[in-house]
Image (cartoon, rainbow, N blue to C red):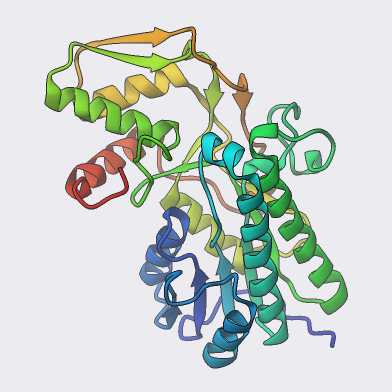
Length: 322
């Protein structure tokens, strides 16, 4: 079978399956698609559909017959979880990807976007990181199992394009944040962790907040609603085998980030840094030239995005993962 569906505007009335629609990214994509006028969105929780179950996944595709798919479902976690359970992160994600992509191909899904992570790139990749850096060096060992699974997904997308002519694509986002994030002490990444820490300091009247490291590493952050908008834009406008970096193209130091969070929550106490704690990689910034060439640029500034996330956190503090 050789089918060639040219990219273009997606039919707002066709069935659109968002795999992982309850997660940070998936929920953002669902919001964006709803706002963009899609009227037949389909989602299943992990209790309703275990994507590691191949037969159940194929049965779901046979029943729902989605025309479009975003694969945002994945087993995710922080450094500790990735280091402790590498088998789970490799096995679970490979099973999810293989089942969804094989079922989507079997049932002739026209447009599919596979979401990965910037951790696919070598630990010592030249900054800013270009798409061409993939597979040019050693991975960060703390999350190499997860990265390998995501790299396998990219290669499967490329293989499907070559063998079946389907215009499926892959997108690799930078550090994401926003409504629906994980604020738990064990599982959160740096930005939601700072929001939780500084908001608690405000409520407790703490005179000092101590953060890990020197505050000098530079990181890039993208609001999940921007990420969701980029996904739809790419599905309608981009057709190529290479994964596309999705980010802002700018970064800040962790110290600057902490300052923005403190201002957003109204914390006026002292900020200290425990330099005995590790800093991690000095810089991690994506080259987003390919995304720009496709006609998309981020629109939510970091200050605005942090304020938006703080507001959401405070409204949902009793119900979220924290």
